Image: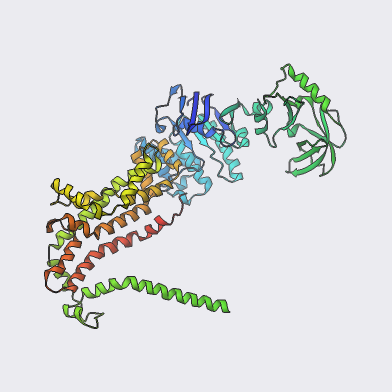
Length: 351
Length: 277
């Protein structure tokens, strides 16, 4: 069990800054997901915690202790890599045991631990097999077992599910949530997949270009995104954004909050348009609506009642609208400008 | 129909060519073995004798008794074995550092190793001999061992091989609290079996067969290797005892064939990268 803290941390690669003066606190026992597009610095942060690619300046604290000068193997952290990084010449047992051998755990204790963990991850029958004879999912479990057996205070995971097929990924997601619940250890999980972030995290740390965009529980990131980036990164399809007036300020709404109808309705924002594309996904249908003035909005509907080229009226209630200032930050309801923006939008409504 | 004919002609041609190459390579060996079992008269006969009338196994005994054969053999084993062991001790850490570490002067140092790789022994043997003589080592086996402790070709080949091993595996080992020594011993070496076997074989063949270097560096039978001992069989009589020389040569070549039989599978692997998953 341990908390992790970054204090004024910077990282340069060949004099190129990747992260500058970053502060972040990851609470003890939480499942924290670092999410963002590739190159945003999320893996860099993870590797700093592990110590395999230390920060250029600043301090990383694990459980309040500065670990800058502590070797990766002595930090009490375990990591699961994207490509699993299993030792190919060792058997499953030797793979799981390797860390224990290096930590001079007695043989009897080692055997007991390996067999217990093997049982937990469902590899008991495979302990003497070579990794090359295992499937992708089983290799993933070897990597997990190898991390778990050391009983670390922090679990680091670098896109551990991205090499699995879609079905197995969903299953492993649930297993990881259960594992976290059972162990109660601090989990730090890196992914570029916002669905993984939303489904597993206690706290999402959303990053872009080395800067933290928002740090909040999933529902807060979804309902109250702090800026345009957060609004468009989380949610499928992403939030619809359209300009609002001359000053580069914008408004937006989520595809699932818009209502489509054949007749005009009485919504705060409404627009007349035509269905350009239709994606029928089973439980829901996603329409792309193109308005007369060339704007295009995605709308997610539970019913599949419209067809392509049909004329429709799109409406969004006032409480489902988001406004963003010229700087890209979201304007909150209590902000003085909020009502002004709401009024401006009413003036733009057509149909 | 026509293409089929051409195809079979092509196949026949390919078999003939392969057979020709095979004979070209295997003929000297067969000739050597045949001669080693002939009498002196048979070796001189014309047309040449292909299969000896009665195999003269005694030729081998004679070759062994012509000089301190066991000493020569022991010297060859000690020199070649020591070179290979010492080369591995130097080569593995060097290749690991060049493949996986960042340090100032890395490029220059690696360039120097490649340069050393290109300088032939004939250029350096006089200064090396003088140095060894000054240190009083000429009466020992060391002048045949020390100059070869660092194997530039081996460092180069092994570095290329190490570079293909994913970084994450080494990082995972560091997180598993493995020392750098254990990373080399338990991860890098087992994963580089084919490359190590190849380097060991090349090194074994070139030092087991080496003639020039020991000729320069030795001045007594006590430190001479098998190659020199067998060459000396020629000088024992006025006429060349080809049957005895060839018996000696067979004994020189057998260890190489044995080692090759064990290593050949790995050698193909080292050059045809099959991917590490």
